[in-house]
Length: 117
Image (cartoon, rainbow, N blue to C red; front, side, top):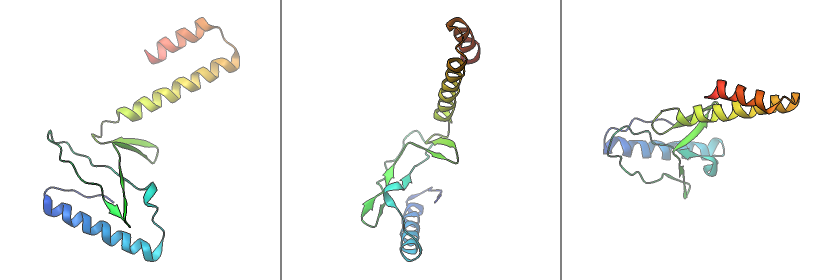
């Protein structure tokens, strides 16, 4: 669910939309609240603290980032965590490549220095 909250009235309509959605889910499908996450993207300097949404008596976890369709989104939409994860995955696959061919440590160092640094 996605909502643009510009004032307190829009937050109230957001809460009512969540209640309507959860009641629809109770009739048609099972909503696993323990796997449900809430993330607030706020670009203002003075962020407002939002209380967690409660669905079926269970609070929804508020997160700073989450992975959606393979992309890690964070609360500032900076993609810093996504790029860091890609770097880590690239480095680990490079290490696996070198270990499988038993290349020397010096070659491994130069490859790492030129590709990462």
